[in-house]
Image (cartoon, rainbow, N blue to C red; front, side, top):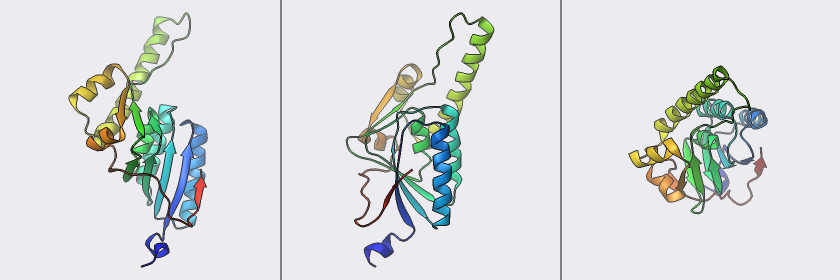
Length: 185
């Protein structure tokens, strides 16, 4: 079997930026092209410091249910809600120098906000935290010490630590085969 036959159905992509409605739209368009091109395995290098919780959860739910096997790679930083997007991958990898960061939701209260408005903000943040924690617990085996840090601060993980808690399958670089196109989403 030659190199091209080995990778029939595989395609390579880069995806970077904030997790927001623009990223959701770009992924919807990219997946439309992938299905038309009969892609079976999408190798995606993700670089993102996070963004909006609902957009990240939408991407997680969408990508994890498609008939395309997603292989996600972290070559630098995948942080905040971008970690949830990353967990949509059936296979997940990180370069040895990459890092991950997860934390609880946060928001700034408007100046002069009344107690009712503050209660609504808090309830929304708690709902977002419950949604993201459910997904984290489904894929990642954090220790009690990790969960304690996560409860009160940013939890940072190196690639090796991410492998230890099963956030990634293996420490490995994004390295498309020679002669294969890499498409920016």
